Amino acid sequence: MRIVIDLNKCLGYAQCVPLAPEVLKLSGEEAVMYDPNPDDTQRLRVLRAVASCPVQAILLDYRDDPGKTTKP
Amino acid sequence: MITRSLDAFKANGQIVIVGASLAGLRGAEALRDEGFGGRLTIIGDEPHAPYDRPPLSKQVLEGWVKADRTKLPHRREIDADWRLGVAATGLDRTKKLVRLGDGTEVPFDRLLITTGVRARQWPNPAEAGLEGVFTVRTCDDAARLQAALAARPRRVLIIGAGYIGSEMASVCRKLGLDVTVAERAAAPLAGALGNVIGAIAAEMQRDAGVDLRTGVSVSALEGDSRGHVCRAHLSDGTRLDVDLVLASLGSIRNVEWLDGARLAAGYWGLGCDAGCRVFDVHGVVTDDIFVAGDVARSPHVLFGYQFLSMEHWDNAVLGAAVAAHNMVCEELDRRAHLLVPTNWSGQFGVNIKSVGVPSFGDEIAFTQGAVTERRFAAAYGRNGRIVGAVTFNQGKWLQHYEALIMRSSPFPPPPAGFDVPADARSVPADFPPRGVGAPDVILTGHDPNERQAELVQPPR
Image 1: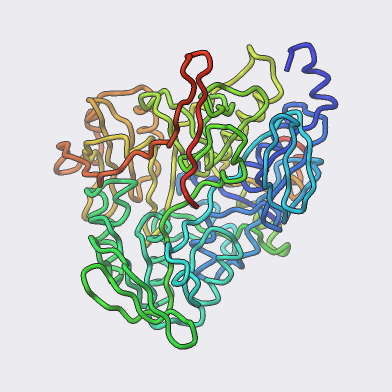
Image 2: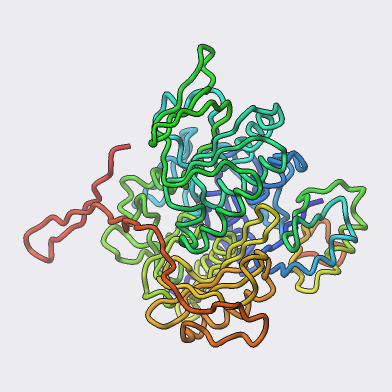
């Protein structure tokens, strides 16, 4: 899978972190660090993390995104 | 391009994008979003599909994420002809084609330039060639450096304490490596955020165990009999035993391939209007050449209409979208790239974010939080208006300052009414002096109608 987090948009709510703890980590209080190309075994967790972001800062590759085909 | 042919161009035209990183990828996607159905070619000198660079100096060097596993997600199908691993070497504006390093030529109707920047190498080539001397810009750089860090060098020397140098110092400490940082200015991050904030960044580094040396430069690197770096000589006379050197000396814009194309391209970047349309050497706008990302340099309405290069992630994403739109629209539909730049950096457990152009300001005032807790916001002002802001672990407040900057609100801003700092007076932001790079240009021709500009290329 491929994800990228727009860390300008990210406000550090960190709701995503406990949903996919092997993919997303908090460095200090609000800096999110993540694995941009997580293993496919993480798929469900990553999808939950993407959906949980209050500011929708996590972009999923359209090929990985069950709900979208062409539009972000 | 004449207006009536726009539909034909969108259906059957040829667009070439030179530069296959973030701006190139997002530009290609935006062109398809905009309904461009013609032939799209994307040229990139690296053999890799577009990947994200910010993780390279953080999670990749830490050893958590592999250097070849930061591939960027695609937003949509692009249907492009990818020419990866071959550099563009020339632009022929008369024949409207791009020349490639493998001798082939790619014709275009319109061209999008997203060639970005590269890492400035250590200036002495013999010393730069020593084993154990690194720079980081590409994923291949990061892979080599990560392996070298994993081999546990006894002491790392980082030359230059900008964002990248500081992030890498943070990684070294996280890995438990001894690290010395040599910075010519009085403090880390001084160029981006000024010495007032720099002093706080310096404390963060020292508290984390970094051997930070400011106000010094590195005068020479020395190799051992195997050609591996073993010692550094500092300008204060110190000699330092080191076995890994990281030069983080900023970037050089990738414009050499445009030599002879008579565009406003030089070490200062590739000049363009606020709609991403490239200027020629005279400062006259071209019709069919566009630019986005780190290599672009455009006038910004909020900052005195000065030409700014914004080497930020959002500049690549949003600039590429504007460029793509303007490449396939009618004149009256053109959009401007009116970015309020934002930036982030994770280091020493602190999330540093900025908005606007702090270095455009000359004063700073702490507006929220507590410096002692490394949790605060500060605003930058110039001529009584706010032009930038920085937050340390207060990212949620950045949008508030962005709104103030967009409105050119008074500086210092009124107290936020929450978490007001003990001392909110404004003081000089104390940026190090900087030479504004002026292009070397001469004018020829006696009659004003014959006047021509010639770029004088610096020796390379």
